[in-house]
Image 1: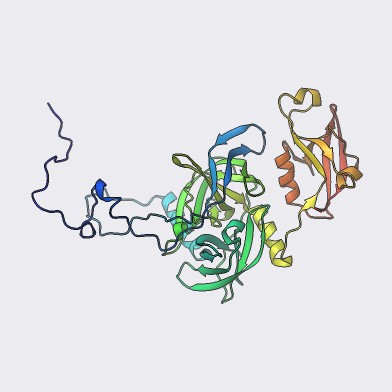
Image 2 (image 1 turned 90 degrees about the vertical axis):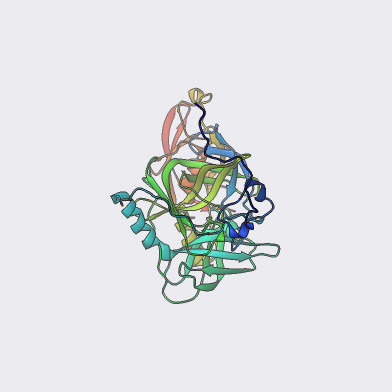
Length: 396
């Protein structure tokens, strides 16, 4: 018995209606009748290198182009809304989990904004998170970089002119400010304590579309990722999630299951065949510290230890007498490290009691400290363990 595939091979008996008067498109018409553009073209992503690395190890874990999710200057194709044909469907029931997501989305919605950015050669859009009721908005540096003007669009459609308070390329974090009444703010949590498998909720303004922020749900799929860029500093200790993060969502919020912001959505992973379903967010602990400095002083001061080094590997672990850590290869003259007695071939294994298993982990730990802070470093040298105290300085 032959099976009917459900399609009629015969030609229609009359002429089809014009494409704009139909609810469907023949495949041959897709190129001839492009869909209308999005309301706003999203900015071109940063050119990230093809490596995603775990901060705890030095070997390559994932390949593919890593693109900042700030968007694209080229035209974005969006299917327009049309009246749909009603089909019989099973009755839906709202589970407790769905209700929780709905409640979180409703609470966070007023604090997520869209940023329309004009530069000398392009127009683009990104997202932002209202962190202070007087109008300070957390976003990504690459969203507002080289901006000549910034318009903030609230979830209710109100528009405000914004100015850049400050930006930090090292962490890809920026703060912009608008003036107006008291604004709703997002609750800021902490990325400390996150575990792989926890619920992750991404909220942003993808593709610069009108109508308020979009919400997508996934899980925390990895922690401590390092994202390397061809055009700027590596982004360290990134949170990886499979919650879809679309172009234009850079600067948006990554939430935990309580609705608290645990990260700032920053980058997406794509390959030659398209998106890989991986997104990356800057931990809110780092973003909040940078934002506080920008708001208070207009700049970010990074601390300086004064060492250069590499990860302990399986090949070097035996000789060094330790299975993981940050191996010191060079010490800068006059640096805090040189003054504290740290030596070449020392392995830094902890800072203030927190384990350090890689150079990236050391950098991240230092970024949460300030010039003048005193830190206690755990050191292993030729299998012998000791501790040293070091007073951190401002990076020259």
